[in-house]
Amino acid sequence: MDDWKTRTKLIHSGIRRSQYGEVAEAIFMTQGFVYDSAEQAEARFQKAGPDEFIYARYGNPTVRMFEDRIAALEGAEDAFATASGMAAVNGALTSMLKAGDHVVSSRALFGSCLYILEDVLSRFGVDVTFVDGTDLSAWKNAIRKDTKAVFFETMSNPTLEIVDLRAVAKLARRVGATVIVDNVFATPVFSRALEQGADVVVYSATKHIDGQGRALGGVVLGTKDFIRGTVEPYLKHTGGSMSPFTAWIMLKGLETLDLRVRAQASAAQAMAEALQWDARLERVIYPGLEQHPQHGLAMEMLERPGTMLALDIKGGRDAAFRFLNALKILVISNNLGDAKSIVTHPATTTHQRLPDEQKAALGITPGLVRISLGIEDPEDLIADVKQALDAV
Ligand SMILES: *Cc1c(COP(=O)(O)O)cnc(C)c1O
Image 1 (cartoon, rainbow, N blue to C red):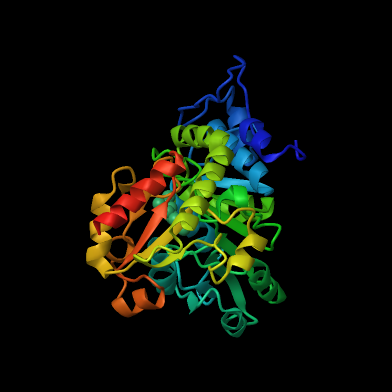
Image 2 (image 1 turned 90 degrees about the vertical axis):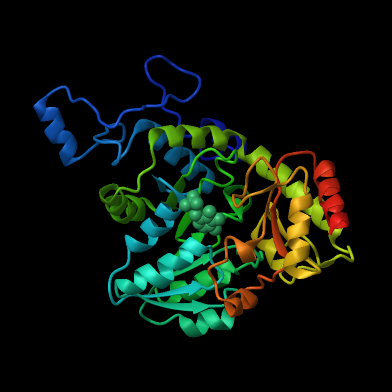
């Protein structure tokens, strides 16, 4: 099973069939489990075996199928599935940190991740140093002998900057710091984060893994020791576990994940190439374009440079709004990784909360729009974007 290729793993890994031999994964829609005897209950509370369950917050057969399948894809020893991507980020960080610990994080983070690192951790006495994630000397200066963890998004939102995972992991390893990465934009299909030096990989399964806009979910992946010894006790007791129904949706999402993200990445590359010299744009940001400042690093780190792109439209916020309102196929929303192509105006939505100078520092200009490519016909998508640019 370890030598299965990705698409085979995504269909067959982790399957647990009941006595009925069902083809599609069963949804074990139960919060608890009945024991044959008092002795069996006692024994299971002492130590539950791999196919023994106690309570759905601790584990459930459908959830375990999802955990085993995504762990097989990622090449991780184990995984813990969570109610949302944020439960996964919070679980990975909070389960291993305590007052007095030091963390280094990149500043370009998803808004809720920034809230955990900037507001929550500091309230509990964790000292967090923020750096420009693309600047290796900044990481070098910020990582100390007593640094406990480093955290970053391997590809940042919304400006698609790449952090050199191998180099940062090397710096972290020297002081024994745990490398935790939020790998949503890189996707589990295109990234080999664990091989490149990450200790812990976190996904919002809400994005490409579901990929059809139905459910919130997340997952933390790492060594068996870290997942079962550190993450699971924290998450199962604080309530961040995934529901069985969500796990079933995510299992079905995994079956088509590879096909979808490859189609999405092809559409992103085609759209970026079709627009890169368009005079109505300040810039087209896509790591697969040679003009992207980190094109070389992106191609080294990732099999394909992702399913997202960003356009900086000349004329600022008014032009960006006219563009969004003129689109006929792409929908205005803030999800990503969906089968439907989605457009977002970060400055007024996902990053609205940030002060103007921070937006500027992160490259979130008034004209910036973020596009998540779906699986529609790329020609239709490019035509839609072009006609919307005409309307600007
Ligand atoms: C969406 C997202 C999250 C949070 O995931 P939810 O499932 O919405 O809780 C975290 N990090 C990144 C990079 C994201 O895109």
